Image (cartoon, rainbow, N blue to C red):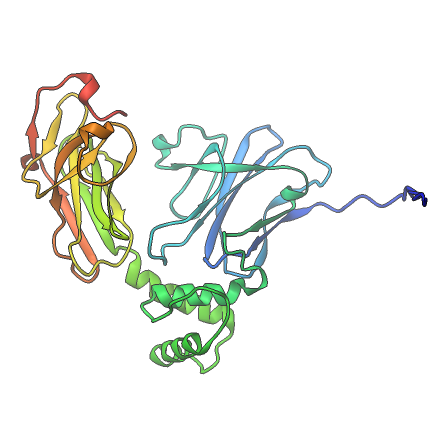
Length: 336
């Protein structure tokens, strides 16, 4: 028998220098990152947004002491260039963020300052100093090419697969794009990504179904449509008076979706003049199928078809005349 001798050698090494965190983007999305940390006053400071292209690593945030036990707090989102809505990377710790570049310290009442709440991840140990964003396909070193493919597709070019490999279809799409934009024949990849992102944002930033609340109170909106041969309804999007929400975040060519809404609060009302029956529940829900709603624990309502899209966007503005006031008990109302 052989025995293995393990020798531990302790070396005296100089202390690691303080530095900012490295954030590496191995996804196929251009992302914007926000970071939070504990200040000397033991308050939480948060700032954003740091833009990171696919395949890039950047330094961001404050200078970190590698020996500190204080965590780094992290949240990231994709930019508005993409069909299907914003993707998020984060956790369960709610902190305040701004829509545009921002920096706040010790703020807990987000709404009073016009800020939003987002869930941050709490990073400790080595993850404080280096964070790698990934997605299920795990593109790794091919993230930059995958990011170009995704932007080409969302800018309206015929890209069928996001795989990080520049095949003939991807090469032809890049050539058509740079020629149409008047770019150099072989622009540097960062320049190409920036131009593609700008083109995709122009095409998609407001594409989809936008619902606006022009009543005097709060409403909740649900959506019904057929996805992959399965009828599905889901909700709720909650809108204060004067607010809008992009309920579908993709380029629409035909009005193949239906919506339902209820007024909530002291005066309860339900949408009138619906076209098709879908299932729904009083709390957040996703329901497959449109039949036998009651037998499956759902209520049923008539959803209204969305207006014909114009340049990829369908818009709905709901006023008091769209609702029928009803007498109801608290248990029948949309749950807040």
